[in-house]
Structures are given as C-alpha cells and as structure tokens.
Image (cartoon, rainbow, N blue to C red; front, side, top):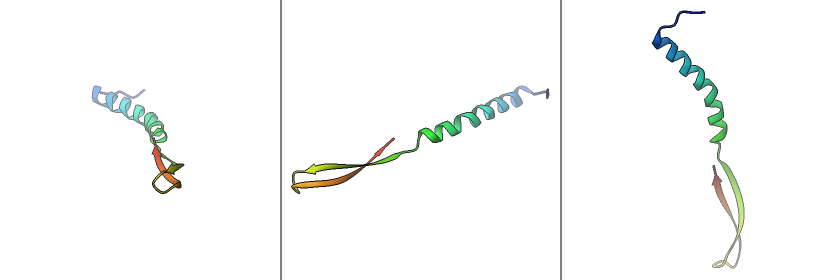
Length: 54
C-alpha cells in the first residue's frame, strides 16, 4: 500500500468519490422535452406546447 500524506489521502478520497458521483449526476440532470396538446380558447382549437421536465 502506498504511503499517503494527509493531503494525498484527501485528494485520493475526493477523486474516488467524484468518479462515482459524476455519472449519476449527469444521468439525473438530463432534461426531457414533453409535447402536450392543450385547448386554446382564443384560437378555438388545440395547439402543441413543449415543456421541459427535469
């Protein structure tokens, strides 16, 4: 096992934690675009509305 200084141990621990957390964070933050049909009274017809859902 390598000899770590306190600073080296903290850096290695943070790097390991970041490598595990970053893919989960990227997967969770992906926004979705949802297309909805709503009735517009002013137009008197249905129209498409895009919403961004996080």
